[in-house]
Image 1 (tube, helix red, strand yellow):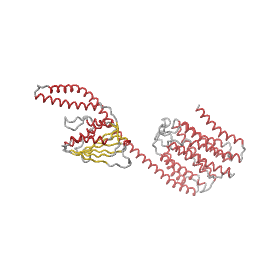
Image 2: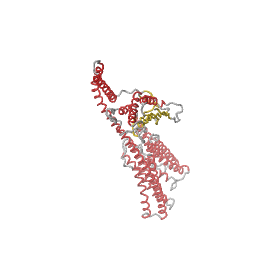
Image 3: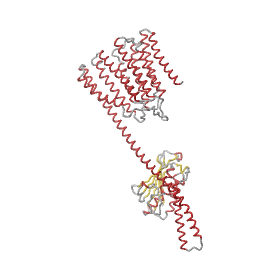
Image 4: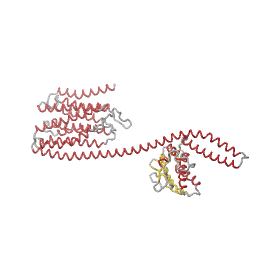
Length: 600
Protein backbone atom coordinates (compact mmCIF):
# COMPACT_ATOMS: atom_id res chain seq x y z
CA UNK A 1 0.00 0.00 0.00
CA UNK A 2 2.85 2.38 0.78
CA UNK A 3 4.37 1.74 -2.66
CA UNK A 4 0.96 2.36 -4.24
CA UNK A 5 0.53 5.59 -2.31
CA UNK A 6 4.03 6.64 -3.37
CA UNK A 7 3.33 6.05 -7.06
CA UNK A 8 -0.06 7.74 -6.74
CA UNK A 9 1.50 10.79 -5.11
CA UNK A 10 4.10 11.06 -7.87
CA UNK A 11 1.40 10.76 -10.50
CA UNK A 12 -0.60 13.55 -8.83
CA UNK A 13 2.47 15.81 -8.85
CA UNK A 14 3.01 15.16 -12.55
CA UNK A 15 -0.67 15.83 -13.27
CA UNK A 16 -0.71 19.08 -11.27
CA UNK A 17 2.40 20.62 -12.77
CA UNK A 18 2.64 19.29 -16.33
CA UNK A 19 -1.06 18.70 -16.91
CA UNK A 20 -2.05 22.01 -15.32
CA UNK A 21 0.56 23.89 -17.34
CA UNK A 22 -0.62 22.26 -20.57
CA UNK A 23 -4.29 22.94 -19.82
CA UNK A 24 -3.74 26.65 -19.10
CA UNK A 25 -1.54 26.98 -22.19
CA UNK A 26 -4.39 25.64 -24.33
CA UNK A 27 -7.04 27.84 -22.67
CA UNK A 28 -5.17 31.16 -22.88
CA UNK A 29 -4.56 32.85 -26.17
CA UNK A 30 -1.03 33.89 -27.08
CA UNK A 31 -0.33 37.26 -25.52
CA UNK A 32 0.85 39.01 -22.40
CA UNK A 33 -1.31 36.92 -20.04
CA UNK A 34 -0.01 33.61 -21.41
CA UNK A 35 3.57 34.90 -21.33
CA UNK A 36 3.21 36.03 -17.71
CA UNK A 37 1.63 32.72 -16.71
CA UNK A 38 4.33 30.68 -18.46
CA UNK A 39 7.24 32.62 -16.96
CA UNK A 40 5.83 32.61 -13.40
CA UNK A 41 4.80 28.95 -13.66
CA UNK A 42 8.30 27.96 -14.77
CA UNK A 43 9.78 29.82 -11.78
CA UNK A 44 7.41 27.92 -9.47
CA UNK A 45 8.31 24.57 -11.06
CA UNK A 46 12.02 25.36 -10.64
CA UNK A 47 11.38 26.14 -6.96
CA UNK A 48 9.73 22.72 -6.64
CA UNK A 49 12.73 21.05 -8.33
CA UNK A 50 15.12 22.86 -6.02
CA UNK A 51 13.13 21.86 -2.93
CA UNK A 52 12.91 18.23 -4.05
CA UNK A 53 16.68 18.02 -4.48
CA UNK A 54 17.54 19.78 -1.23
CA UNK A 55 15.27 17.42 0.75
CA UNK A 56 18.22 15.02 0.76
CA UNK A 57 20.85 17.51 1.99
CA UNK A 58 20.40 16.65 5.69
CA UNK A 59 22.34 13.39 5.72
CA UNK A 60 25.24 12.68 8.14
CA UNK A 61 27.28 11.72 5.05
CA UNK A 62 29.16 14.81 3.83
CA UNK A 63 29.41 13.43 0.27
CA UNK A 64 25.66 13.04 -0.06
CA UNK A 65 25.07 16.48 1.43
CA UNK A 66 27.50 18.11 -1.02
CA UNK A 67 26.01 16.13 -3.91
CA UNK A 68 22.46 17.31 -3.32
CA UNK A 69 23.53 20.86 -2.46
CA UNK A 70 25.44 21.14 -5.75
CA UNK A 71 22.39 19.86 -7.61
CA UNK A 72 20.34 22.46 -5.76
CA UNK A 73 22.91 25.12 -6.73
CA UNK A 74 22.52 24.19 -10.40
CA UNK A 75 18.74 24.45 -10.08
CA UNK A 76 19.16 27.78 -8.25
CA UNK A 77 21.22 29.20 -11.13
CA UNK A 78 18.56 27.92 -13.50
CA UNK A 79 15.97 29.80 -11.45
CA UNK A 80 18.08 32.98 -11.49
CA UNK A 81 18.23 32.93 -15.29
CA UNK A 82 14.48 32.31 -15.47
CA UNK A 83 13.82 35.24 -13.12
CA UNK A 84 15.83 37.52 -15.42
CA UNK A 85 13.82 36.21 -18.37
CA UNK A 86 10.59 36.90 -16.44
CA UNK A 87 11.80 40.40 -15.56
CA UNK A 88 12.11 41.39 -19.20
CA UNK A 89 8.95 39.69 -20.50
CA UNK A 90 6.58 40.35 -17.58
CA UNK A 91 7.75 43.44 -15.72
CA UNK A 92 9.37 45.34 -18.59
CA UNK A 93 6.85 44.08 -21.17
CA UNK A 94 9.56 43.80 -23.81
CA UNK A 95 11.26 40.98 -25.72
CA UNK A 96 14.29 39.36 -24.17
CA UNK A 97 17.42 41.02 -25.64
CA UNK A 98 19.76 39.08 -27.85
CA UNK A 99 22.47 38.52 -26.60
CA UNK A 100 20.72 37.90 -23.29
CA UNK A 101 22.38 38.78 -19.97
CA UNK A 102 21.21 35.51 -18.45
CA UNK A 103 22.79 33.35 -21.17
CA UNK A 104 25.95 32.86 -19.11
CA UNK A 105 23.83 31.85 -16.08
CA UNK A 106 21.90 29.30 -18.14
CA UNK A 107 25.19 28.00 -19.52
CA UNK A 108 26.98 27.68 -16.17
CA UNK A 109 24.07 26.06 -14.32
CA UNK A 110 25.17 22.66 -15.67
CA UNK A 111 28.64 22.92 -14.10
CA UNK A 112 27.41 22.37 -10.47
CA UNK A 113 25.48 19.34 -11.74
CA UNK A 114 28.68 17.87 -13.21
CA UNK A 115 30.56 18.80 -10.04
CA UNK A 116 27.94 16.96 -7.97
CA UNK A 117 28.42 13.82 -10.03
CA UNK A 118 32.20 14.10 -9.49
CA UNK A 119 31.59 13.48 -5.77
CA UNK A 120 30.11 10.01 -6.50
CA UNK A 121 27.86 9.83 -3.41
CA UNK A 122 27.21 6.12 -3.98
CA UNK A 123 30.89 5.31 -3.41
CA UNK A 124 31.83 3.64 -0.08
CA UNK A 125 35.05 5.69 0.16
CA UNK A 126 34.33 7.08 3.62
CA UNK A 127 37.87 8.38 3.99
CA UNK A 128 38.04 10.22 0.67
CA UNK A 129 38.82 13.82 1.48
CA UNK A 130 36.20 16.44 0.63
CA UNK A 131 38.95 18.66 -0.78
CA UNK A 132 39.35 16.37 -3.80
CA UNK A 133 35.72 16.92 -4.77
CA UNK A 134 36.08 20.68 -4.35
CA UNK A 135 39.23 20.84 -6.48
CA UNK A 136 37.67 18.66 -9.19
CA UNK A 137 34.64 20.95 -9.20
CA UNK A 138 36.85 24.04 -9.52
CA UNK A 139 38.75 22.45 -12.40
CA UNK A 140 35.53 21.65 -14.24
CA UNK A 141 34.11 25.11 -13.56
CA UNK A 142 37.28 26.82 -14.80
CA UNK A 143 37.31 24.73 -17.95
CA UNK A 144 33.68 25.43 -18.88
CA UNK A 145 34.15 29.13 -18.14
CA UNK A 146 37.21 29.06 -20.41
CA UNK A 147 35.21 27.40 -23.19
CA UNK A 148 32.51 30.06 -22.87
CA UNK A 149 35.10 32.83 -23.02
CA UNK A 150 36.91 31.14 -25.90
CA UNK A 151 33.90 30.28 -28.10
CA UNK A 152 31.03 32.64 -27.22
CA UNK A 153 32.34 35.90 -25.71
CA UNK A 154 34.41 37.01 -28.75
CA UNK A 155 31.21 37.38 -30.82
CA UNK A 156 29.50 39.31 -28.03
CA UNK A 157 32.16 41.88 -27.08
CA UNK A 158 35.35 41.60 -29.20
CA UNK A 159 33.76 41.48 -32.67
CA UNK A 160 29.98 41.72 -32.05
CA UNK A 161 28.07 39.36 -34.34
CA UNK A 162 24.61 38.29 -33.16
CA UNK A 163 24.29 35.42 -35.65
CA UNK A 164 27.68 33.87 -34.85
CA UNK A 165 27.10 34.52 -31.14
CA UNK A 166 23.80 32.59 -31.19
CA UNK A 167 25.25 29.76 -33.25
CA UNK A 168 28.33 29.40 -31.01
CA UNK A 169 26.28 29.59 -27.82
CA UNK A 170 23.69 27.03 -28.94
CA UNK A 171 26.31 24.51 -30.04
CA UNK A 172 28.39 24.82 -26.88
CA UNK A 173 25.28 24.70 -24.68
CA UNK A 174 24.10 21.51 -26.39
CA UNK A 175 27.52 19.91 -25.96
CA UNK A 176 27.43 20.78 -22.27
CA UNK A 177 23.93 19.36 -21.76
CA UNK A 178 24.70 16.11 -23.54
CA UNK A 179 27.96 15.79 -21.58
CA UNK A 180 25.84 15.77 -18.42
CA UNK A 181 23.55 13.13 -19.96
CA UNK A 182 26.57 10.99 -20.95
CA UNK A 183 28.08 11.13 -17.44
CA UNK A 184 24.73 10.19 -15.89
CA UNK A 185 24.38 7.32 -18.38
CA UNK A 186 27.86 6.12 -17.41
CA UNK A 187 26.88 6.13 -13.73
CA UNK A 188 23.64 4.26 -14.49
CA UNK A 189 25.64 1.57 -16.29
CA UNK A 190 28.29 1.25 -13.55
CA UNK A 191 26.14 1.25 -10.42
CA UNK A 192 23.38 -0.94 -9.04
CA UNK A 193 20.75 -0.83 -6.35
CA UNK A 194 18.90 2.31 -5.21
CA UNK A 195 21.50 4.74 -6.57
CA UNK A 196 21.11 3.35 -10.06
CA UNK A 197 17.43 4.25 -9.88
CA UNK A 198 18.27 7.78 -8.71
CA UNK A 199 20.82 8.27 -11.49
CA UNK A 200 18.32 6.95 -14.03
CA UNK A 201 15.74 9.58 -12.98
CA UNK A 202 18.35 12.34 -13.15
CA UNK A 203 19.46 11.13 -16.58
CA UNK A 204 15.87 11.10 -17.85
CA UNK A 205 15.36 14.66 -16.61
CA UNK A 206 18.66 15.86 -18.11
CA UNK A 207 17.95 14.17 -21.47
CA UNK A 208 14.45 15.66 -21.59
CA UNK A 209 15.88 19.12 -20.92
CA UNK A 210 18.67 18.74 -23.50
CA UNK A 211 16.22 17.68 -26.22
CA UNK A 212 13.61 20.31 -25.31
CA UNK A 213 16.24 23.09 -25.32
CA UNK A 214 17.33 22.03 -28.83
CA UNK A 215 13.71 22.07 -30.01
CA UNK A 216 13.10 25.51 -28.44
CA UNK A 217 16.31 26.90 -30.00
CA UNK A 218 15.19 25.64 -33.42
CA UNK A 219 11.73 27.18 -32.90
CA UNK A 220 13.31 30.53 -31.91
CA UNK A 221 15.42 30.49 -35.08
CA UNK A 222 12.25 29.93 -37.14
CA UNK A 223 10.38 32.62 -35.21
CA UNK A 224 7.77 30.09 -34.06
CA UNK A 225 8.46 30.20 -30.31
CA UNK A 226 6.66 32.18 -27.67
CA UNK A 227 6.54 31.71 -23.90
CA UNK A 228 3.63 29.42 -22.92
CA UNK A 229 3.50 27.54 -26.21
CA UNK A 230 3.50 23.75 -26.40
CA UNK A 231 7.27 23.89 -26.88
CA UNK A 232 7.54 24.56 -23.15
CA UNK A 233 5.79 21.36 -22.06
CA UNK A 234 8.92 19.12 -22.30
CA UNK A 235 10.91 21.88 -20.57
CA UNK A 236 8.45 22.00 -17.66
CA UNK A 237 8.41 18.19 -17.55
CA UNK A 238 12.21 18.14 -17.19
CA UNK A 239 12.02 20.60 -14.26
CA UNK A 240 9.38 18.46 -12.54
CA UNK A 241 11.42 15.32 -13.21
CA UNK A 242 14.43 16.77 -11.41
CA UNK A 243 12.29 17.44 -8.34
CA UNK A 244 10.78 13.95 -8.57
CA UNK A 245 14.30 12.47 -8.66
CA UNK A 246 14.98 14.11 -5.32
CA UNK A 247 11.73 12.74 -3.85
CA UNK A 248 12.51 9.23 -5.14
CA UNK A 249 16.01 9.45 -3.67
CA UNK A 250 14.52 10.43 -0.32
CA UNK A 251 12.49 7.22 -0.34
CA UNK A 252 14.91 4.66 -1.77
CA UNK A 253 18.20 6.05 -0.34
CA UNK A 254 17.53 6.99 3.30
CA UNK A 255 20.26 9.04 4.98
CA UNK A 256 23.17 6.90 6.13
CA UNK A 257 24.23 7.04 9.78
CA UNK A 258 27.18 5.98 11.83
CA UNK A 259 25.01 3.37 13.54
CA UNK A 260 23.52 1.92 10.34
CA UNK A 261 26.16 2.05 7.59
CA UNK A 262 25.03 1.73 3.98
CA UNK A 263 24.45 -1.78 2.76
CA UNK A 264 26.62 -3.43 0.14
CA UNK A 265 23.93 -3.00 -2.50
CA UNK A 266 23.39 0.64 -1.64
CA UNK A 267 27.08 1.46 -1.63
CA UNK A 268 27.95 -0.43 -4.80
CA UNK A 269 30.94 1.27 -6.33
CA UNK A 270 32.58 1.24 -9.68
CA UNK A 271 36.19 -0.03 -9.73
CA UNK A 272 38.61 2.29 -7.95
CA UNK A 273 40.70 2.83 -11.09
CA UNK A 274 37.74 4.48 -12.89
CA UNK A 275 38.37 7.90 -11.36
CA UNK A 276 36.57 9.76 -14.13
CA UNK A 277 36.33 13.18 -12.41
CA UNK A 278 40.12 13.45 -12.17
CA UNK A 279 40.53 12.18 -15.72
CA UNK A 280 38.01 14.67 -17.05
CA UNK A 281 39.80 17.48 -15.22
CA UNK A 282 43.18 16.42 -16.61
CA UNK A 283 41.74 16.15 -20.14
CA UNK A 284 40.30 19.64 -19.73
CA UNK A 285 43.73 21.03 -18.85
CA UNK A 286 45.40 19.26 -21.78
CA UNK A 287 42.78 20.58 -24.22
CA UNK A 288 43.86 24.21 -23.73
CA UNK A 289 47.01 24.13 -25.93
CA UNK A 290 45.09 22.20 -28.61
CA UNK A 291 42.35 24.83 -28.75
CA UNK A 292 44.89 27.66 -28.87
CA UNK A 293 46.76 25.93 -31.72
CA UNK A 294 43.50 25.45 -33.64
CA UNK A 295 42.61 29.13 -33.18
CA UNK A 296 45.98 30.30 -34.50
CA UNK A 297 46.34 27.92 -37.45
CA UNK A 298 42.95 26.64 -38.62
CA UNK A 299 40.38 29.21 -37.46
CA UNK A 300 39.02 31.81 -39.90
CA UNK A 301 38.15 34.24 -37.10
CA UNK A 302 39.33 37.87 -37.29
CA UNK A 303 42.78 38.70 -35.78
CA UNK A 304 41.17 40.45 -32.81
CA UNK A 305 39.24 37.27 -31.93
CA UNK A 306 42.33 35.10 -32.30
CA UNK A 307 44.34 37.45 -30.09
CA UNK A 308 41.59 37.44 -27.43
CA UNK A 309 41.43 33.65 -27.53
CA UNK A 310 45.20 33.37 -27.13
CA UNK A 311 45.23 35.66 -24.08
CA UNK A 312 42.26 33.77 -22.62
CA UNK A 313 44.07 30.47 -23.10
CA UNK A 314 47.22 31.73 -21.38
CA UNK A 315 45.19 32.97 -18.39
CA UNK A 316 43.24 29.70 -18.22
CA UNK A 317 46.49 27.69 -18.31
CA UNK A 318 47.75 29.56 -15.26
CA UNK A 319 44.50 28.95 -13.36
CA UNK A 320 44.13 25.29 -14.30
CA UNK A 321 47.84 24.54 -13.71
CA UNK A 322 47.55 26.02 -10.22
CA UNK A 323 44.50 23.88 -9.48
CA UNK A 324 46.22 20.76 -10.83
CA UNK A 325 49.27 21.51 -8.67
CA UNK A 326 46.99 21.93 -5.66
CA UNK A 327 45.22 18.66 -6.39
CA UNK A 328 48.50 16.79 -6.75
CA UNK A 329 49.68 18.17 -3.43
CA UNK A 330 46.47 16.99 -1.79
CA UNK A 331 46.98 13.56 -3.37
CA UNK A 332 50.54 13.40 -2.01
CA UNK A 333 49.37 14.38 1.47
CA UNK A 334 46.65 11.74 1.33
CA UNK A 335 49.13 9.06 0.24
CA UNK A 336 51.53 10.01 3.04
CA UNK A 337 48.66 9.76 5.51
CA UNK A 338 47.75 6.32 4.19
CA UNK A 339 51.41 5.28 4.35
CA UNK A 340 51.66 6.34 7.98
CA UNK A 341 48.43 4.50 8.72
CA UNK A 342 49.78 1.37 7.02
CA UNK A 343 52.97 1.51 9.08
CA UNK A 344 50.99 1.88 12.29
CA UNK A 345 48.73 -0.99 11.27
CA UNK A 346 51.78 -3.17 10.55
CA UNK A 347 53.28 -2.39 13.96
CA UNK A 348 49.99 -3.21 15.67
CA UNK A 349 49.70 -6.42 13.65
CA UNK A 350 53.16 -7.55 14.72
CA UNK A 351 52.40 -6.70 18.35
CA UNK A 352 49.14 -8.65 18.25
CA UNK A 353 50.91 -11.54 16.54
CA UNK A 354 53.56 -11.69 19.28
CA UNK A 355 50.85 -11.59 21.94
CA UNK A 356 48.99 -14.38 20.17
CA UNK A 357 52.14 -16.50 19.97
CA UNK A 358 52.77 -15.85 23.67
CA UNK A 359 49.21 -16.85 24.52
CA UNK A 360 49.52 -20.05 22.45
CA UNK A 361 52.75 -20.92 24.26
CA UNK A 362 51.13 -20.39 27.61
CA UNK A 363 48.09 -22.46 26.65
CA UNK A 364 50.11 -25.44 25.35
CA UNK A 365 52.59 -25.41 28.21
CA UNK A 366 49.72 -24.99 30.69
CA UNK A 367 48.06 -28.18 29.48
CA UNK A 368 51.34 -30.06 29.71
CA UNK A 369 52.11 -28.64 33.16
CA UNK A 370 48.67 -29.54 34.53
CA UNK A 371 48.99 -33.17 33.52
CA UNK A 372 52.57 -33.48 34.75
CA UNK A 373 51.81 -31.76 38.06
CA UNK A 374 48.92 -34.08 38.88
CA UNK A 375 50.99 -37.18 38.06
CA UNK A 376 53.91 -36.01 40.21
CA UNK A 377 51.86 -34.69 43.11
CA UNK A 378 50.52 -38.07 44.25
CA UNK A 379 53.88 -39.91 44.71
CA UNK A 380 55.39 -36.71 46.11
CA UNK A 381 52.77 -36.68 48.87
CA UNK A 382 53.71 -40.24 49.72
CA UNK A 383 57.43 -39.34 49.86
CA UNK A 384 56.69 -36.47 52.26
CA UNK A 385 54.56 -38.76 54.44
CA UNK A 386 57.17 -41.50 54.63
CA UNK A 387 59.95 -38.97 55.39
CA UNK A 388 57.88 -37.59 58.27
CA UNK A 389 57.35 -41.15 59.58
CA UNK A 390 61.12 -41.83 59.48
CA UNK A 391 61.91 -38.63 61.37
CA UNK A 392 59.40 -39.53 64.10
CA UNK A 393 61.02 -42.95 64.80
CA UNK A 394 63.05 -42.66 68.06
CA UNK A 395 65.52 -45.48 67.29
CA UNK A 396 66.63 -44.20 63.87
CA UNK A 397 70.41 -43.58 63.56
CA UNK A 398 71.66 -40.01 63.18
CA UNK A 399 72.96 -40.68 59.66
CA UNK A 400 69.57 -41.99 58.55
CA UNK A 401 67.83 -39.08 60.29
CA UNK A 402 69.95 -36.56 58.32
CA UNK A 403 69.15 -38.33 55.08
CA UNK A 404 65.42 -38.36 55.90
CA UNK A 405 65.59 -34.63 56.71
CA UNK A 406 67.19 -33.88 53.32
CA UNK A 407 64.60 -36.05 51.57
CA UNK A 408 61.78 -34.07 53.24
CA UNK A 409 63.35 -30.69 52.34
CA UNK A 410 63.82 -31.65 48.71
CA UNK A 411 60.31 -33.09 48.58
CA UNK A 412 58.86 -29.87 49.98
CA UNK A 413 60.87 -27.83 47.46
CA UNK A 414 59.54 -30.04 44.70
CA UNK A 415 55.99 -29.58 46.02
CA UNK A 416 56.43 -25.79 45.82
CA UNK A 417 57.45 -26.15 42.17
CA UNK A 418 54.39 -28.33 41.57
CA UNK A 419 52.13 -25.73 43.19
CA UNK A 420 53.59 -23.09 40.87
CA UNK A 421 52.95 -25.32 37.90
CA UNK A 422 49.35 -25.81 38.97
CA UNK A 423 48.96 -22.07 39.53
CA UNK A 424 50.35 -21.47 36.04
CA UNK A 425 48.21 -24.14 34.38
CA UNK A 426 44.96 -23.62 36.31
CA UNK A 427 44.82 -20.04 37.58
CA UNK A 428 42.18 -19.22 40.14
CA UNK A 429 39.33 -16.89 39.14
CA UNK A 430 40.11 -13.24 39.65
CA UNK A 431 38.18 -11.39 42.36
CA UNK A 432 38.13 -7.75 41.32
CA UNK A 433 37.86 -5.02 43.93
CA UNK A 434 38.75 -1.35 44.05
CA UNK A 435 42.41 -1.04 44.98
CA UNK A 436 44.91 1.66 45.83
CA UNK A 437 48.02 0.66 43.90
CA UNK A 438 50.35 2.81 46.01
CA UNK A 439 49.32 0.89 49.15
CA UNK A 440 49.99 -2.49 47.50
CA UNK A 441 53.40 -1.37 46.23
CA UNK A 442 54.28 0.03 49.65
CA UNK A 443 53.30 -3.24 51.36
CA UNK A 444 55.38 -5.34 48.98
CA UNK A 445 58.47 -3.16 49.40
CA UNK A 446 58.08 -3.11 53.18
CA UNK A 447 57.89 -6.91 53.31
CA UNK A 448 60.91 -7.34 51.05
CA UNK A 449 62.90 -4.75 52.99
CA UNK A 450 62.98 -7.03 56.06
CA UNK A 451 64.74 -9.75 54.02
CA UNK A 452 67.49 -7.38 52.85
CA UNK A 453 68.67 -5.83 56.10
CA UNK A 454 72.17 -7.34 55.74
CA UNK A 455 72.48 -7.00 51.93
CA UNK A 456 73.83 -4.10 49.90
CA UNK A 457 70.48 -3.49 48.17
CA UNK A 458 68.34 -0.37 48.54
CA UNK A 459 64.78 0.47 47.55
CA UNK A 460 63.56 3.83 46.29
CA UNK A 461 59.83 4.59 46.00
CA UNK A 462 58.64 7.29 43.62
CA UNK A 463 54.86 7.27 44.05
CA UNK A 464 52.56 9.77 42.37
CA UNK A 465 49.81 11.01 44.66
CA UNK A 466 46.89 11.18 44.18
CA UNK A 467 46.79 8.14 41.88
CA UNK A 468 43.64 6.84 40.17
CA UNK A 469 42.29 3.61 41.62
CA UNK A 470 42.17 0.31 39.75
CA UNK A 471 39.99 -2.78 39.83
CA UNK A 472 41.97 -5.93 40.52
CA UNK A 473 42.78 -8.87 42.75
CA UNK A 474 45.12 -7.77 45.54
CA UNK A 475 46.63 -11.25 46.08
CA UNK A 476 47.40 -11.72 42.39
CA UNK A 477 48.98 -8.28 42.06
CA UNK A 478 51.05 -8.97 45.19
CA UNK A 479 52.26 -12.16 43.52
CA UNK A 480 53.22 -10.22 40.37
CA UNK A 481 55.12 -7.54 42.28
CA UNK A 482 56.86 -10.13 44.53
CA UNK A 483 58.07 -12.07 41.49
CA UNK A 484 59.44 -8.97 39.71
CA UNK A 485 61.10 -7.60 42.86
CA UNK A 486 62.50 -11.05 43.68
CA UNK A 487 64.08 -11.35 40.24
CA UNK A 488 65.59 -7.86 40.55
CA UNK A 489 66.98 -8.63 44.02
CA UNK A 490 68.55 -11.90 42.80
CA UNK A 491 70.15 -10.11 39.82
CA UNK A 492 71.57 -7.27 41.96
CA UNK A 493 72.74 -9.69 44.66
CA UNK A 494 74.88 -11.49 42.09
CA UNK A 495 76.32 -8.10 41.06
CA UNK A 496 77.21 -7.17 44.65
CA UNK A 497 74.25 -4.90 45.38
CA UNK A 498 72.40 -2.03 43.76
CA UNK A 499 69.32 0.18 43.77
CA UNK A 500 65.75 -0.84 42.87
CA UNK A 501 63.42 2.04 42.00
CA UNK A 502 59.67 1.45 42.08
CA UNK A 503 57.69 4.22 40.40
CA UNK A 504 53.96 4.76 39.92
CA UNK A 505 52.60 7.33 37.47
CA UNK A 506 49.33 8.26 35.81
CA UNK A 507 49.34 7.90 32.02
CA UNK A 508 46.08 9.09 30.39
CA UNK A 509 43.51 6.39 31.31
CA UNK A 510 46.05 3.96 32.79
CA UNK A 511 48.14 3.55 35.93
CA UNK A 512 51.77 2.58 35.30
CA UNK A 513 54.14 0.76 37.70
CA UNK A 514 57.81 0.69 36.75
CA UNK A 515 60.48 -1.49 38.41
CA UNK A 516 64.00 -0.44 37.40
CA UNK A 517 67.18 -1.89 38.91
CA UNK A 518 70.92 -1.36 38.52
CA UNK A 519 71.73 -5.01 37.96
CA UNK A 520 73.27 -6.67 34.89
CA UNK A 521 70.04 -6.39 32.84
CA UNK A 522 68.11 -8.98 30.86
CA UNK A 523 70.00 -11.16 28.43
CA UNK A 524 67.10 -11.56 25.97
CA UNK A 525 64.02 -9.39 26.77
CA UNK A 526 62.03 -11.02 24.00
CA UNK A 527 62.09 -14.38 25.80
CA UNK A 528 61.61 -13.10 29.35
CA UNK A 529 57.93 -14.12 29.54
CA UNK A 530 58.34 -17.52 27.85
CA UNK A 531 57.59 -20.48 30.13
CA UNK A 532 60.67 -22.19 31.63
CA UNK A 533 63.04 -19.51 30.32
CA UNK A 534 65.49 -18.54 33.05
CA UNK A 535 69.06 -17.30 33.40
CA UNK A 536 69.42 -18.45 37.00
CA UNK A 537 71.63 -21.42 37.94
CA UNK A 538 70.16 -24.90 37.70
CA UNK A 539 68.07 -25.69 40.75
CA UNK A 540 67.43 -22.05 41.71
CA UNK A 541 64.80 -20.94 39.21
CA UNK A 542 61.95 -22.66 37.37
CA UNK A 543 61.36 -20.03 34.66
CA UNK A 544 57.64 -19.84 35.46
CA UNK A 545 57.54 -16.67 37.58
CA UNK A 546 57.40 -14.11 34.79
CA UNK A 547 55.06 -16.31 32.70
CA UNK A 548 52.65 -16.36 35.63
CA UNK A 549 53.02 -12.56 35.94
CA UNK A 550 52.26 -12.17 32.23
CA UNK A 551 49.03 -14.16 32.55
CA UNK A 552 47.88 -12.35 35.70
CA UNK A 553 48.44 -8.92 34.18
CA UNK A 554 46.50 -9.97 31.07
CA UNK A 555 43.61 -11.09 33.30
CA UNK A 556 43.56 -7.56 34.71
CA UNK A 557 43.21 -6.14 31.13
CA UNK A 558 46.72 -4.76 31.48
CA UNK A 559 50.03 -4.94 29.71
CA UNK A 560 53.51 -5.90 30.94
CA UNK A 561 56.76 -5.22 29.08
CA UNK A 562 60.44 -5.39 29.91
CA UNK A 563 63.73 -4.11 28.58
CA UNK A 564 67.19 -2.85 29.49
CA UNK A 565 67.94 0.65 30.68
CA UNK A 566 70.46 2.77 28.73
CA UNK A 567 72.58 3.15 31.87
CA UNK A 568 72.49 -0.55 32.75
CA UNK A 569 69.98 -2.69 34.55
CA UNK A 570 66.52 -3.97 33.74
CA UNK A 571 63.18 -2.20 33.72
CA UNK A 572 59.71 -3.77 33.92
CA UNK A 573 56.64 -1.69 33.06
CA UNK A 574 53.09 -2.69 33.98
CA UNK A 575 50.09 -0.74 32.66
CA UNK A 576 46.69 -1.27 34.29
CA UNK A 577 43.41 0.47 33.34
CA UNK A 578 42.41 3.06 35.92
CA UNK A 579 39.06 3.83 37.50
CA UNK A 580 38.71 7.59 37.13
CA UNK A 581 36.09 7.69 39.88
CA UNK A 582 38.82 6.77 42.36
CA UNK A 583 40.68 10.04 41.82
CA UNK A 584 41.34 11.76 45.12
CA UNK A 585 42.00 15.40 45.83
CA UNK A 586 39.82 18.39 45.08
CA UNK A 587 42.06 20.19 42.60
CA UNK A 588 42.10 17.56 39.89
CA UNK A 589 43.40 20.02 37.34
CA UNK A 590 46.67 20.57 39.21
CA UNK A 591 49.66 18.32 38.59
CA UNK A 592 50.37 16.39 41.80
CA UNK A 593 53.89 16.22 43.13
CA UNK A 594 55.37 12.71 43.43
CA UNK A 595 56.38 11.38 46.83
CA UNK A 596 59.90 9.95 46.89
CA UNK A 597 61.05 7.63 49.68
CA UNK A 598 64.36 5.84 49.99
CA UNK A 599 64.46 2.63 52.06
CA UNK A 600 67.65 0.88 53.07
